Every structure is written in structure tokens, then in C-alpha cells.
Amino acid sequence: MTQGLLLVDHGSRRASANALLDEVAERVRAKLGESALVEPAHMELAEPTLAQAFARLVERGATEVVVVPYFLSPGRHATEDVPRLAREAAAAFPDTPHRVAPPLGPHDLLDQLVLVRFRE
Amino acid sequence: MTQGLLLVDHGSRRASANALLDEVAERVRAKLGESALVEPAHMELAEPTLAQAFARLVERGATEVVVVPYFLSPGRHATEDVPRLAREAAAAFPDTPHRVAPPLGPHDLLDQLVLVRFRE
Image (cartoon, rainbow over all chains, first blue to last red; front, side):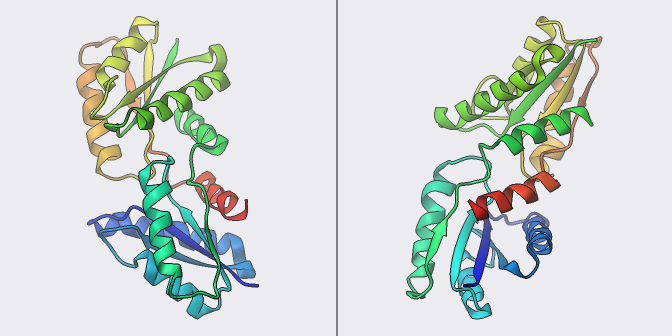
């Protein structure tokens, strides 16, 4: 089994904002090493779309896809829009199961990060 | 010296979204104990505003205010709008210095959190 991590943020009209997610994906890829494939995607406003990233993961050999919403809270985007787009993307690959992880927050690591920013 | 932590997010028309920041502020408050005062605020769309939270911190005894932008990236909101609102709020309290911290991301703790969500 080869897992694919599909990291999806909101997406922006500003290329610099979208590039930040590429950098997160690159760092996550470095942490994971050979243990999983990683592709970034944007929910809207920019490519790669979630469907493009899903297809790319399957092309690269992923046999299971985990979609991680890069959002701070379980709002509508993370809990409805991203899961819907993931279902639509997955429909083209019936042999590749997928699941959608919770968004980043709330989480103790975020609370810790607030304190890091406060103290530095 | 009593530090005040002013935690500011974007703000939403949905009360449930705004309430999430109150919960983060509450947990951060619990971690800080007596060492600092904490007030949440919303950049727009909801109260308390940044100015209201700044005034509240001074009323409660803060002699210095650190504004922490609860944003994932150093986009326009975190690097321009929040600092401008902070300057405007601080103008009413010339004896209370303030600084604006970097936004949450990019940071290694966020990269770690992506892996936590991927693996759980």
C-alpha cells in the first residue's frame, strides 16, 4: 500500500499565497521521506485543483489517498466543500479509497503555537 | 509589567466560527495562568473588535500588548490590516506599548500538525 497525502488549502488569486502551500507540502514531503506521496491542491481560485492533485497521486502510485484540509477550523470549507470535492475527484478512481482528515484546528499544537508567537 | 495577549482572527458572520476563537483564547489563558492577560478579537465582521479588546486589556491592567494574528500565513490581513488596526487601537493608549507578532504560519509546528492529521 502506498499512501498519498493531498494537502488542500482555500486557494488565492495571489500566486505568492498559493506558493506558501507548495512550501508546506515540500517540508512535509521531506519529513515523510519515502513513506508517502504528497501533493498540494487549492479548493478554489487556483490550480492544482483537488481533482488534479488526486489524479496525480494515483498516477504516481498511491493506492490510498488521505485529504488533509489546511484550514484552522472545522468550518463549511473543511467539513463540506473539501469532502464533496474529494468525493467527486475519487469517483474517477474507484479502486483508490480515500478519506478526509479533520482540519488543523482546533488542536493543542495550535494553542502552543500561539504561545510561541506571543513569547518570541 | 503585565503583558496582554490580544489574539485576533479574521472574524465571521457565523457565531459558531467566532466562538472557536473564544475557545482557543480560553485554552491559551489556562496555559498562561497568571503570567499574562488574554483577550480575543476579530479583524472584521464581528465583535469584539481589535480596538475593543485592546481597551479591555488596558482596563484589566495590561502595561504592554502583544497582538498575535491567528492566521495561517503572512498575507495582507496578518501583515498589513492587523498591524494598522493595532496602531489605530494603540493611539488611544500612548502609555501602553504594543507589538504585532508574526502570524501562526509558516512554522514547524504546523508542518507537524499536518502529519498528525494525516496519520490519525
